[in-house]
Length: 69
Image (cartoon, rainbow, N blue to C red):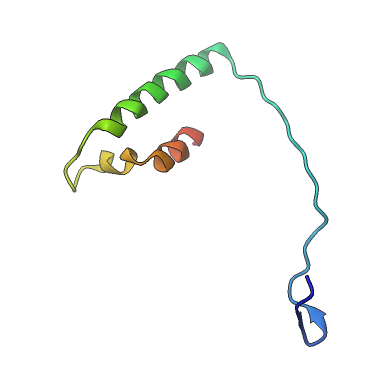
Protein backbone atom coordinates (compact mmCIF):
# COMPACT_ATOMS: atom_id res chain seq x y z
CA UNK A 1 0.00 0.00 0.00
CA UNK A 2 1.42 3.37 -0.98
CA UNK A 3 -0.87 5.61 1.08
CA UNK A 4 0.93 7.22 3.98
CA UNK A 5 0.02 9.32 6.98
CA UNK A 6 2.83 11.19 8.74
CA UNK A 7 5.31 9.35 6.50
CA UNK A 8 4.16 5.96 7.81
CA UNK A 9 1.90 3.41 6.08
CA UNK A 10 -1.74 3.77 7.10
CA UNK A 11 -2.14 0.02 7.50
CA UNK A 12 0.52 -2.60 8.12
CA UNK A 13 -0.66 -6.00 7.00
CA UNK A 14 0.87 -9.31 8.05
CA UNK A 15 2.45 -11.58 5.45
CA UNK A 16 -0.05 -13.65 3.48
CA UNK A 17 -0.27 -17.30 4.47
CA UNK A 18 -2.59 -20.03 3.35
CA UNK A 19 -3.48 -23.01 5.52
CA UNK A 20 -6.27 -25.22 4.23
CA UNK A 21 -7.32 -28.26 6.21
CA UNK A 22 -9.80 -30.80 4.96
CA UNK A 23 -11.94 -32.39 7.64
CA UNK A 24 -13.79 -35.62 6.97
CA UNK A 25 -17.31 -35.59 8.35
CA UNK A 26 -18.64 -38.55 10.30
CA UNK A 27 -21.57 -40.46 8.77
CA UNK A 28 -23.88 -39.13 11.48
CA UNK A 29 -22.81 -35.56 10.65
CA UNK A 30 -23.43 -36.15 6.95
CA UNK A 31 -26.91 -37.47 7.69
CA UNK A 32 -27.78 -34.53 9.93
CA UNK A 33 -26.38 -32.06 7.41
CA UNK A 34 -28.42 -33.61 4.57
CA UNK A 35 -31.63 -33.48 6.62
CA UNK A 36 -30.97 -29.87 7.56
CA UNK A 37 -30.34 -28.91 3.92
CA UNK A 38 -33.64 -30.51 2.85
CA UNK A 39 -35.51 -28.54 5.53
CA UNK A 40 -33.82 -25.29 4.53
CA UNK A 41 -34.71 -25.91 0.89
CA UNK A 42 -38.35 -26.28 1.96
CA UNK A 43 -38.20 -23.06 3.98
CA UNK A 44 -36.93 -21.12 0.96
CA UNK A 45 -40.22 -21.75 -0.82
CA UNK A 46 -42.49 -20.89 2.13
CA UNK A 47 -43.95 -17.50 2.99
CA UNK A 48 -44.17 -16.44 6.63
CA UNK A 49 -45.86 -13.65 8.56
CA UNK A 50 -43.74 -10.62 9.46
CA UNK A 51 -43.49 -11.59 13.13
CA UNK A 52 -42.48 -15.23 12.43
CA UNK A 53 -38.81 -15.90 13.36
CA UNK A 54 -38.53 -18.40 10.48
CA UNK A 55 -38.94 -15.55 8.00
CA UNK A 56 -35.21 -14.77 8.31
CA UNK A 57 -34.38 -18.26 7.05
CA UNK A 58 -36.00 -17.66 3.65
CA UNK A 59 -32.77 -16.04 2.45
CA UNK A 60 -30.05 -18.40 1.18
CA UNK A 61 -27.26 -16.44 2.87
CA UNK A 62 -29.01 -16.63 6.24
CA UNK A 63 -29.41 -20.36 5.75
CA UNK A 64 -25.72 -20.83 5.00
CA UNK A 65 -24.84 -18.93 8.15
CA UNK A 66 -27.07 -21.21 10.21
CA UNK A 67 -25.62 -24.29 8.53
CA UNK A 68 -22.11 -23.30 9.60
CA UNK A 69 -23.06 -22.82 13.25
